Structures are given as structure tokens and as C-alpha cells.
Length: 128
Image (cartoon, rainbow, N blue to C red):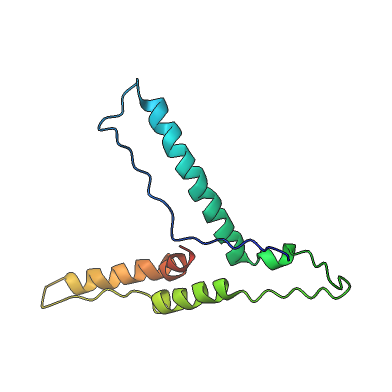
């Protein structure tokens, strides 16, 4: 029987330290402990980013039975989910409006909206 590796992840691990104050004497120990967690988090982030980009484990699978039939199809649901969420959250650009009656504020808010449009803020929000 062929064992396939399944990565189970529940979010990145938060880096804590039991030290109340970082000093010259303990900075190396604190950083060494934090670096181990950081490396694990970094590997998970890289794996998830590659998965999102379409480099998924099925592409590296080695087929032992009838290797001449080797259909590998990637259904990139991760990309689909992210694109849907981006469209839902950032589909309509933010527009600023005034509340109540204030002299001169309406023109400033219009100018702010024009600045946001000129800088293409909606597209930059989607990139994040």
C-alpha cells in the first residue's frame, strides 16, 4: 500500500517568549527558540502559497500501477476560494461620504475620493 502524505494545518503558531525582558545575556536564547517556530511557520506559508499557485502534491505523485496512464489534473480550489473572497470583499471600491451638514467638508471628501481613484486604490487593495 502506498502512503500519501497529508499535511494538516490549523494556522500559524504564534511566537511567544517566557522571558519578561530581552537583554544582551538572553537575546541569543530567545531568538533561537523563536527561530524554530518561525521556520515552521515559514515552511507552512511557502507550502500554502505554492498550493494556491497550482503546485499541488498530485503533480509529484509517482504512479506505480500502469504508469503509462498518468493523468494529473489540478483542480485549483484554493485559487478559486481566494478569488471569490477578494471579489466579495473588494469588488466595490470604498467611497467616502459625509455625515450631517458641514460647510466645506463635501468638497474635501469629493477631493479625497478623486485622489483614491487617481491612485487606483481599489486595485491595490485587491493585491493585498
